[in-house]
Structures are given as C-alpha cells and as structure tokens.
Image (cartoon, rainbow, N blue to C red; front, side):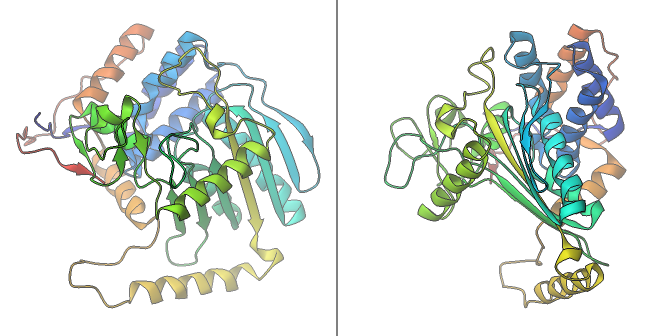
Length: 372
C-alpha cells in the first residue's frame, strides 16, 4: 500500500465552523456543538490529529444511532466545598469534560483545591484540552478519563484495562506552560485508526494481534488486537490507578464495561472523568511559582544534547510549535478526512468549501512511515 501525503489545508476557524454546523444539524445545541468542535480542532492545531476532526464521523454516527444523547441533562449528583460527582447523561464527551473542569476551577477559586468526577459520558478527545483550562486562572490542571479495555495486565493475554490517558498543565512566567498529555499505552487507539485511514504502518513493539503476536498492521489491532502499556507493569499500574480514580470515584463503569464506541454505535457510552484544579497561591505566591517553573525549564533546556538528538523539548512545546505553524498555514487534512467531512456536510446540508491541495503538494509513493 502506498502512502498518500497530507496536502489539503484549511483554517482552524473554517474547520471549527464546519464541525459545529454539522453537529447542530444532528440536534446538538449550539453551545455543546461549539465546545465539541473547538476540542477537536484544538487537537488538530496542536498536531494531535489522532484526536482531531478524524473523530467527528464516529461522533455523528453515534448520535444518529442513538448511542449518544444530543441534548443531555448534565448535572451534579452530590457535592461539597471541594468535590463534586456529576452525571454526563450520555452526552458528547467534550461538553461533559468542560462542565466538570469548569466546576473544579470554580470550587478551587474558593477552596484552593478541588476534584470533580463525572460518570456516564463519552470520548472526550485530548486530555490536555481540559487540564489547560486551569492555566488562565493561574492554577494547575489535571485531567483523566477511562476508556474501553484494550490492554492486558502484565502477564495477561486478554484486555482488562484501558490505555487510560491523563494530562497535567502547569503555568509558567515568561516561558511556555508545561503541558504533559499521554495515554498509558505505548501508542494510542487514535493512531491505530489514523494509520488504518491513511494506509500507514504502526510503530513496532506497541501492538499485538488477537493471537498475541506483535503486529504493525492497524487492521490486526482493530479486529481484536491489544495495545501494550508504557514501561511494562508500570504503565499497567498507572492505567489501573486512573481507571479507579475515574470510574470508581465517579461511581461509574470500570474500563472492562466501557463499550467500544466504533463497534457499538447504538450503545450508550460509559466513560468517566476525573478533573482537578489546584490554586497555586494557596501553597506559594503565584509569581514565585512561575519564576521557578521558568528556571526549571531553562535548566532542562540547557542540558547537553545527545549525539542522536537535535534539541530538547519541554512537555507541550512541540504542540505549541505545531499550533503556531498551523494557525499561520492552516490545518493539514488527509484525503480520507476531507472526504468524510464533505460527505457529512452534504448529508446535513452544511456549506462546505472547495478544498484544493496546497500549491506544490505532491503525492508520494514511498514506503509507509511508522506512526509513533
């Protein structure tokens, strides 16, 4: 199979508007449609295409099949001054995640620190989207979600836990904020789906097929394969802890009971979230904290470079660079994503731009790259 180079570009505003209007046509209220579209496009802007508008089609498919509730009653089940448990009412994940983190920030403004959990929601996109909401309030943000079981425990050969992702965001002074966002697997479901869509191979050593054999073919993983945890038993332990902090603290489903969102379109989602906000001023003066973060960043950046490396990046720095470039040049979309968006727009009666390859863009017949 040949690789088709990504060479279709669209502005973030235009892409966000298209996604929002499509969701509105599917019965999603404008505010929720905007949040969801913004979450997906922000991922594309930051170079996390696996969690960008490539996900819009399955969101729409689930809305049409009845698996997602377009007009959920997101509500607080019970709360205290520092905590809350919420119910997402099977709505789209991004509005649920924003509601939970907004509640956490509000409580932390009064109490210094807050944890909010949510049950009965759906895929919420990139975890950093929510952790970064705390930055504008000079807070540390923490975001976690559980997902369908796709990893075995160390020593096992069947999926029991999700590759549950988490993100932490720390404000800085003159430097960029530190934003760490990662799944607890060596690679992610999003990269599997993107590789399948673009005829690419997966990274070696990250996946098993249904028989437990290593594979780089995304179709092997989709048809019953497994993701492998980061750092062996350590990643398995981290994923388990996140599953407990999300599913159990929200009194929701554990990973093994979260349905596959692509295979069971008409089945309600069962993802749970954990959002935390920490008001730094309650511990140390914010300017002192930011100054020390800047100092740490410079210490890390000034590390002597290894012979096989070009430079050192801080967590979130590559994403910031990608966002700056894509805001200026547009967001690149592969042919399959362009066609999916065009089809969704036609089906819903949403105006769709006439996208053309960037001048000078060429197709490549080179061997498929590894997606790491």
